Image 1 (cartoon, helix red, strand yellow):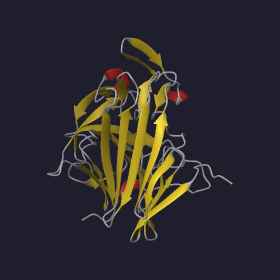
Image 2 (cartoon, rainbow, N blue to C red):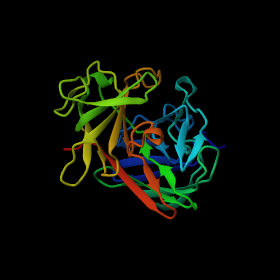
Image 3 (cartoon, rainbow, N blue to C red):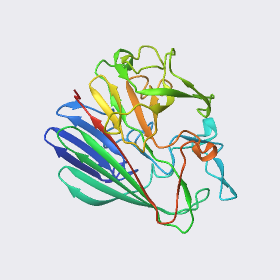
Image 4 (spheres, helix red, strand yellow):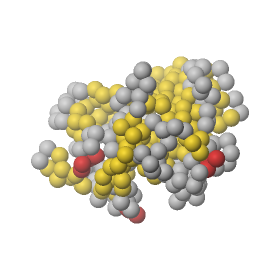
Length: 298
């Protein structure tokens, strides 16, 4: 019998173990020994609240699912009816195929064919690789069509917390700017985090702060990576990921501040309309973006 997330691929390096899945090509579980690093889901359960999913060819929301490209007005399905948005791309429920596998790594592929609202062909590849430090995830997209196409990438891991709630967890977020948003999560502007409850650059407990917030102007280390730290777990964002969305899951009963989503994004929410960080891939052009998760980071 096939489970809701399709085939399961377990990779390991020492006591680091991760499971990636056929449906959506996402990561269902990551643990070190008996300790869960991610707030994942069971093999016999459907993925809820975006856990571990890949967000392609756009992350977050497109207002009214409508955008203009190449002189043409386009309409996507409203996959989040409550906000009248098209949310998190087109591959979350698609079947991916296993292309390569070693004990410590797995490579999955998916061809995104033209469809209403997105008449483009993308060849998509995601590689998950474990080592003694943590998990690295590299996503590659190739425009396999004959016309330029709009593109953005993201991912949706939830970090598990040790104290039962994010309130007591210490967050360090190297972001200078947060995006302001309306009641549907669509950006309306931006402001510096200085002097606001959203300034976590120095590291402090999340407390009662509700986060469903996109951040920009990420401060990077000498290796070009921006590092978001929650307690002793680090999510690093390669240079292609210019934005980070943080979500405490307050309105979701299955999350409800029991974990924290740290979502790498190459573009801002609603980028298909605003152009904020939007990529345009020319025919044959390839794009890659990497992020990683390092438990017990020093």
